Image (cartoon, rainbow, N blue to C red):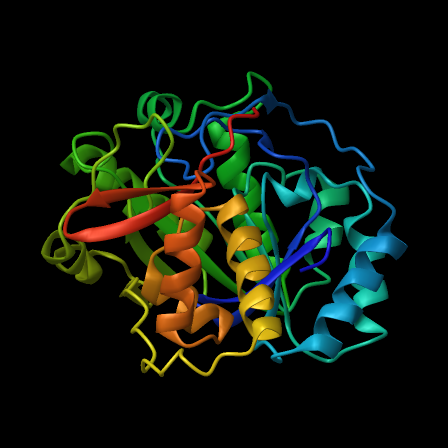
Length: 318
C-alpha cells in the first residue's frame, strides 16, 4: 500500500477499514501493557507535524482508486493520531475527494485540549478508549505521560461527547487480573454514566503484544458486564473468515500484490490468516501461501495463542 495508508482491513467493530497512519511508530501519550505494537518509544503529549497533510491525502486518494472501497477511512495506525498537529487540515483534504465516513481511533487522552477537540469534531465517528477510571489502575494498565490527569481526561471525554454531532464509540479493554476486579469495573460504569457515549464496546486482549504478558478475560465475563452500563453496550466479536478459493491459478501479479499488502498490514500490527484474508479481500489459500513464504524467509514469526495462530513482523527496529 502507500506510505501512509494500509489495508483495507476487516475491522471487528467498523467493517472494511482503510487505515491512515500519521504518527511514527509508537509515539503515544500512553504506554499500555497490552499494546499490540509493543512498548512506547516516545511517550509525549506534544503535537507534531510529522508528515505533509497533502502527501497523506494524496496517499488516501490513490488507495481509494486501487480499491476495494472501504466502509470507513480510519485514522489510527502506529501511535496516537491526535499527536498529529495537522489532523484537522488532513480531514478537510480527505473530505474533498470522498464521502466515505471518517473514523478517529484515539486513546482519548488529549480530547480536553481545545485544538484536539476541534480537530476530532471534524470526524463522523470517534472511538476513544477508557480502560480504567481510578488512578491506580489507570497508572498500572495505561502508563500515562506525567502530564496526563485521569480526571482531566474523563472530563475531556464528557465535554467532547456532549458537543459532538457524530457518534462516540467508547472502547473498554479488560485484561485478566489487571483491570477486571469489581472496584475497577464499578469506576468504569460510573465514568461511562458521565460520558454517555453512543455505544460502549467491551473488548479484551486479542493480538499478541511484543514482550507483553497481558491475558484475555473470557467472553462470558464480558457478556456479564453488559447489563451494568446504562448506555448501549456490546462485546466485540471476532471477524468471520471469508470463503477459501483455489490458489493454483493465481497470477504472479496478484501474488505479489497480496504479498505487499500482507507484509504492510503485519508490519503495523499482528494478524491471523482469517483476519488478513477477509480484511485484504484475497483468497485464504493465497494469503496462506504468502504467510508461509514470509515465515520461511524469516520476515514473519508465527505465534500460537489460545488455539489461534498470529503472524507477527520479525522486524527488530524500535
